[in-house]
Amino acid sequence: MRTLPVFFALVLVPLQGQVPEVRTTAKDRTALSVTIYQSGLAAIRDTRRVSLPAGPSRLAFADLVPTLRPKSATLLDPGGGLQVRERNYEFNLLSPATLVDASLGLPVRIKGEEGQPDQAGTLASVPLLNPRMRPDAKPLERIAKKPSAYVQSPDPEVVVTTSEGIRSWMPGDLALTQVPPHLRTSPTLLQDLVAPAAGKRDLTLLYTATDLTWEANYVATLASDGKHLDLDVFATVKNQSGARIADTTLQLLAGEPWSTTRFPR
Image 1 (cartoon, helix red, strand yellow):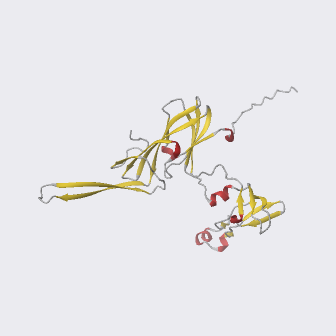
Image 2: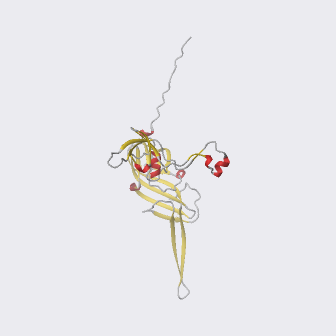
Image 3: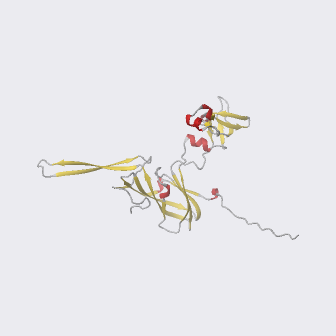
């Protein structure tokens, strides 16, 4: 029998952690303009000076309006040559609840009793804030939320493994030794980029956001002679997006935009 040679193809896949992340915040901002329509939609132009390395990197564009529409985001590079490979929107904000959930399997310190040192351990579970339903529960039991439909009741405690064994604690008795990197302190748009050369660039992110509206109020004052009328116009802007928008060039437009991807110049 003749033995045929076997060939193997080696495919190298770059690891996500090997790509450097460049984070830009509102402190890097050089210009901000917001155009608000009466329909509750706003077009935002955010320009920042960012220092990028040569080659691939991940740009974390933070301090955005929380109600942004990720699909509308467009990155402009006046210098040219910058390639956008992938874009992801992260709204996994840092909070006590998300911090505990994201720390599963990470080291923790357990506060010792009075006069006792702290104890090291590993977080082995997260709190069960909502009851867990049985997979085989009948539809009527699920709709009526009968106790028989649930297999586990809510439990705020967590399980920690230590050198002395396994024990449950309340999350407030634990001190986490690190913050998981995927938790963000503000709404962040991640973009995988490839820059032809290292250096500073003035990058502009265009996107649309909701929950920004305005309305006009008119006050007419008739002169005593009855022949002249003074008309004053006041605009009231309502910001329900959850973002603090300061030092911006504001433009108010009546009607609705004909396209969510077209921005005013």
